[in-house]
Image (tube, rainbow, N blue to C red):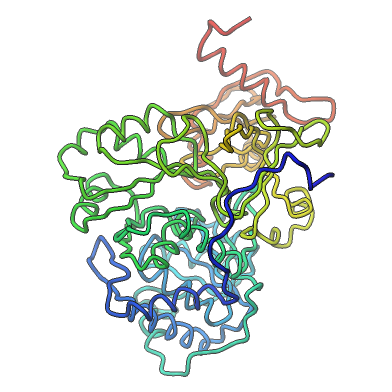
Length: 526
């Protein structure tokens, strides 16, 4: 395939060189410049750390972890909500030469055990309220080391680890070596570990600095840190700017608004459901949010109507971004109020091409095909998944599985999805995972899962089921809910006589989407 095509679109050049250092070293350089400034504040408890304390505790955690037998190349899995100690633990693990794998803290025991096993994690960091889940998952996965932000029998206390007086470890860490292993569903299938190097993450942070507003002083760290957007776009950018990060463990309307006003937050990064809250909820009017100077929305498409309502209501610019975990996060971004419906322009040092899904030929501006991207901040492959890597990463180009085009001004537009993933509140739900689960239910002979458009969540999973006898739709929904994380819950179970498939047995999801659309709007029936 011709990768020197005249149709390749180029983002702006990087204005700064990428230092050949590890991610924690990059963060700690800035921390040492701002030792007396506040770096992290927990909104719930007001517990805070200065940049100097952050630098010190990163080193102390690395020493304490090493004393417990952690070795370079080992993996520590994070199973906790956003907290200042999430940052300390993650960066301290990297200083010890380790790899950090963040997991969704709402995972079930089985989902957590899968990630522990698949990532090869030997240590898990968590909080007391999650300890029972972690103990059960660790037992299933066959590991014993649990680092707890608290005290409990059979665990390693975070406080004890950072109190270690051993010298800080100084392993020889290659900047090209693995730093983080977040999990993403990629373009198809169940979740896979995404291998992100120190260099890729440092590069992405430098890109973020170039694209961001340098006047940002206080950032609300609400987007989950186990997710690429929460750790890179919020946490790493905030630390690189020398800003104050106000961590919020979860979205609760009153707590969210109070955190903004109490700490005078000037930058808020959210997902579309929270944008809807800001646009329409009466509670927002009871709080003075004039401190907010900039809002960013990402992880899922944001409608023009909701964006406009937020801009009008709060008198604040809104930016949108489009990206993938495989690119550390961002591929394109819209600084503020640009072309309606677009996903913005290319990130610095990023290239794009549009490839015909039938011929594999590059297409010119304005024509629609699969969007491919290339950049210095991309992953090196999926963890222990060479076949999946070969499908998604082609000659250095990242196949997104998204259908769209790039216009004459370089704006990226997403118009359809080649991949089958359902995006719920920014989280990826592979239909195949839910289908495999449904097929183990005694009432289900066959099943197919698709996404249904939803104003609040973007999409929600809906199952078409061929029943064995009587179908208890509500019972099946409850059965699935007991086995998967909340964003994977089925919102509807619809009986059907047969699942439409092609000659090779592949589910024809577009047929099901058309059937669903006709059921929701009978005027569309032909």
